[in-house]
Length: 239
Image (cartoon, rainbow, N blue to C red; front, side, top):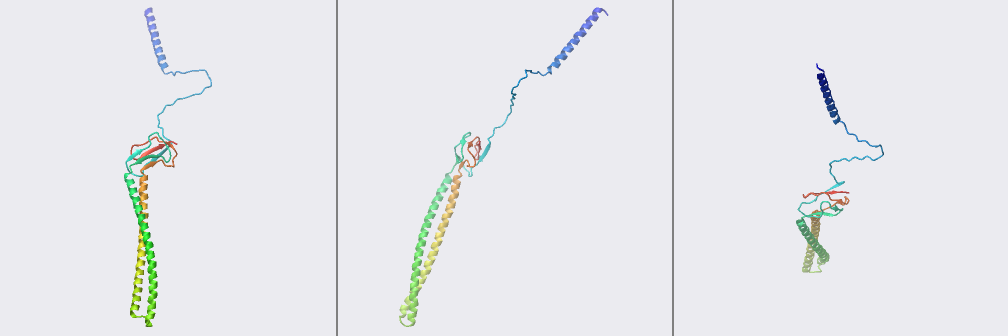
């Protein structure tokens, strides 16, 4: 083989090897991590971490009205600060107000009836005292008449008159006792009606009171951060 061919082949091999080495060095350099260097010194290290999350209040207070109805007034909105006992919302209370007014009138009417029944009982008691006095007087006259008639000291007509007077007084006493018993029954019934109407009034007043929603005194003041548009409301309190 001629010398110049040997030189050409050797040069080609050298160039090929150089290319292969260059490619290998270039590829290996891609996986090398760049390292920052610096002078050793004392300093604070800080790291920033990014993450998604939900901010919640420390304390939730679920507030729901105890009566059904349409919300007519909402006195707070999201983000407002609230205090214990503060009025938060009010429901429609037309019917509840009418029921309370009607039962107040019923209580007053029952009280008037009770006063009248008490007066009637006093009158009946007085009539009973008079009837008892009449009975005792006529009974005494009748007893005396029996003794006198037996001895022949009074006429038969006088004897019969005193007996009739005693019988009339006896009947009057029985009637007076019956009127007292009836008056007592009416007084007791009137008192019972007062109690019943007062109980009904308390119940309707409680229903009327429930048309307003307040923050319970059990919870401290905080910030209303969440409300729903539905009837049952939720109040998130941040203590």
